[in-house]
Image (cartoon, rainbow, N blue to C red; front, side, top):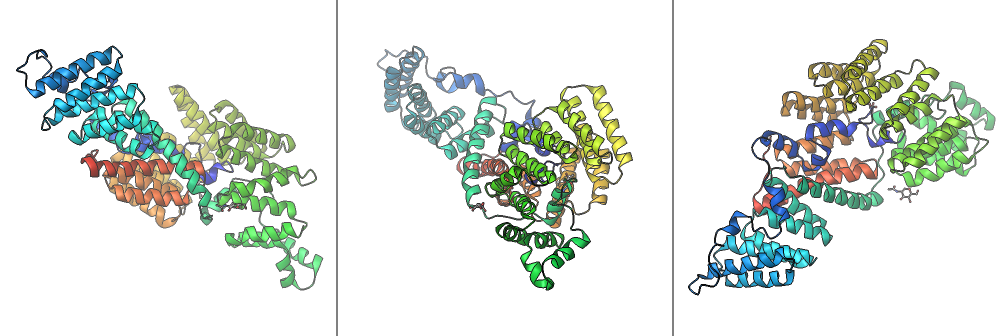
Length: 579
Ligand SMILES: *[C@@H]1O[C@H](CO)[C@@H](O)[C@H](O)[C@H]1NC(C)=O
Ligand SMILES: *[C@@H]1O[C@H](CO)[C@@H](O)[C@H](O)[C@H]1NC(C)=O
């Protein structure tokens, strides 16, 4: 796994951790809305929303509500107040169509004052129409006010809700916008692209904003030991992840003084390495700092190790200067510099700076061209960038340098599979699947091989076989929480078995209570079951465990979507159907 995207996506041996989840929940667009996919799938045949065209005619003269009374001759004196109001509205509609919004507004105002108060549905139409005219004049506050009156009288008035959502967006009231657009999506059964797009957009903006805020003030959090070990195991040609040589420590002690206890105290890096072996990770950063500040002989190693732990606890700001220093140490061991470049490159990728990232990986390949890790990690970067051919070339290079690299072989298969799948090439898909069979035959102890194969199988709807592969994975790595989550998701997709799915995800949390992927997935399922409070709780747990701002933003979007649904349920009694 790529150095920094590992902490982001503990579940992924591939570049596609969300991919599978998205398959379950629906198109990426609908992801934030939770129930959208299953709901719209079950309703797909029922109706194509009436929404789109209707809403684009702001004055809505085509709407049945407004047509009811409109036929009466406006000149007649014996008209009822309602008829006169209707007539005023019709005049307003004419002005509206002619682009004369000021006059239209006057007519709608007249209609409103003429209309008997008990005629709620007519009155709400007049307000809605006036809001449409205000919208044309970019008077957003007025739009919101009129739409609110319309909605008060007719809580299921899609047009008014959507118009208010758009105005709230203009006023930068994202939360209010989200609530309205959520109500619209539910009323339209998630069938209208326009409202789904607005929901998606505002959810992303909200997530980004909140994550930015929260990320700054967050407590650093050490990932689980399983995670840390797996992170280090993704580097094979790396000095700092090697265990200490038996002699190393003693030699060092002899070098300095006779009193070994005291000496150990002063040798920060070696001490840090020892803590690492003992899984006493919290003390590593401070020991490295001692080594660096005393300008010890392992300063470069200590900088790299400290940076690595800063990355692991999600503090890229602190990691970067350390990585920069190692990279700039011309006389340091080239393995250290290459490793620092891989990590900085991955960090840039996390920060969505693909150019800087590519630059670092290329430089790593230049200074240490026989380092398999460089190609392995660069291959993963290329997958994220959707440059599958280059990814495959990198994996090939890695395999050439390290023929026993099962991971690179499995990932190569996965890259080929994705390429075939997205390119809609069935015979290449078949070849990739056969490739997976070869990999698991050749490396029966490589859990990742089974996991990636299982993802491809799931994708091909070969659920039974995918399930077997996850079982193999669990057999090999019983403490890998992620696998249980994937297996749980598979049960949902395959058998729609919620209980079994949730059971497996609970097991994942038992194994690793810092598994953010498990909390996220459970939250998504709870949304679909209509347990919104529980879902929000789960998403918040995942937010506190998120290892990057991007990840956090995504989780906030999910959480906000769930929260908006609870608000909509409370205010309008609207609920999407649940599983
Ligand atoms: C868990 O397994 C996944 C594959 O399912 C792998 O990508 C990941 O590195 C493993 N994580 C740990 C912590 O071992
Ligand atoms: C990250 O490290 C920087 C510099 O060491 C520090 O100022 C900041 O408080 C740290 N942030 C977190 C969230 O720990």
